[in-house]
Length: 300
Length: 247
Ligand SMILES: Nc1ncnc2c1ncn2[C@@H]1O[C@H](COP(=O)(O)OP(=O)(O)O)[C@@H](O)[C@H]1O
Ligand SMILES: [Mg+2]
Image (cartoon, rainbow over all chains, first blue to last red; front, top):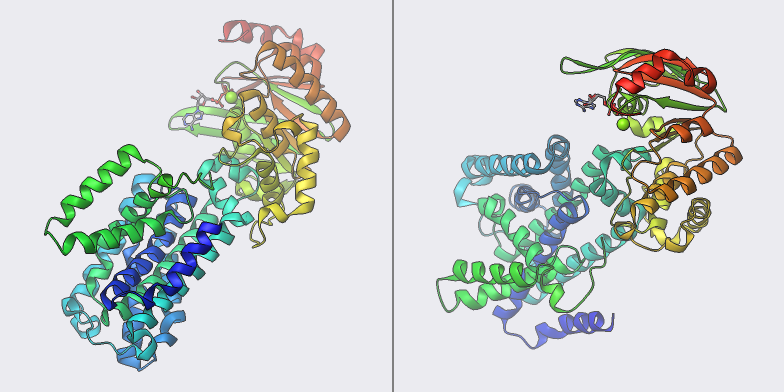
């Protein structure tokens, strides 16, 4: 607890001492942290591996980007819409996916996301196709490196607070009950389909908020946001950090982004280094980076 | 209380249940017996809505329930305990029962931490006391031995104050000593709670001791139904059991 408070204070004051570049890298870390934490709600609490979370990230991003550029909304005002659109998309994709299990769920989520990516990638008239939507005005606050840092940190903390509350609430237990034992869950009055769908929608909404932030970080929206590699980033961050802990995905995301920036500045072999790091962690620290801190898994 | 009429259930071409009828009266302890593969578990699954019957109907307190999903049926006052003990392994025994309490009342969509549901915690404590698990209430279910898991399963099935309790082989997998204990426990508990019980069990002694009505199932069909004394001496039953895989 004390360590967490210390970390929080550190994060609050860090931008005062860091270079603009370092602040931007950390901000990207927060955004991925929010995205990976959202993904982990489905991965850990529901026990389902989504390979299509980029769809919700991208939905949030393009909603914000399009509302600003086509409808003239102020960037910050698009947040609720970005979250809502991502949630609605999750409702549709989830409706078809959560009733299938395991590998089919993974393949279906991947297929939906790739389908969406293909549409965004080709629909020049509306989404700008593979040129994306560049040069988005995001206002003074989100337009400054420090402002965006604090905005991303705030949304990340809100997201984590929400996940923490969910984790301990009867609803969180019910989600894990369905994961643990579907037959038993039904026999105590829980509806697996409704619970999975709800968990999936909440997860999609959070991922949408992360996508919203990404627009400000790049002042643009690109089809890449919906590509499967974006989904993979969330998976890697969650596993790297440790999916059984609330803070695991965030830790993994920060490590992923920081390490990536560090290595990419020096060599072009970032994928190789990432592979080695992952291999090492999976082999020696199967519980992820949180395991390094000796923290016991808070949950199941 | 429970009325099963002409229920048929096929898996592919295989008739697991063939026009099975059975009536469980309020307050009765009704046993469903038969050799392995007779269709007992399948019938349970039909009753609780896990399988949809291909023919026939199931009524609970007069209402047709065979088209309803399991969560709806259990909330109408049916407690379910499984042949293979089932629990939510990532949670403590207490959390298992609390979740059952909330789930059966449709109360899981709430934001307060589970640990702050005082009334449910007290009630869970009481239920765990009934099944003799108060000492392991805060142990994670994954660490509990099978005997304790079966008790936990029963505590969960009682969480909704059911009128009808379904127990599928409550003694299976237990040691001889554990069986005795479990039998005593079930008998005491049920007499006190004035439940209606439908159960299956291979242990003949247990069946004769608990049941006041027996239905014999054999290859998916009802072979006989009656009082324990009559069933015990029914030549068809004797033959089916000796001919079956189980004595
Ligand atoms: N889901 C299923 N799919 C195919 N066959 C099944 C299924 N469930 C049960 N059966 C078959 O139905 C028959 C009855 O099984 P079951 O009801 O489990 O018997 P019992 O509980 O009396 O031992 C068995 O032959 C079993 O193989
Ligand atoms: Mg059986």
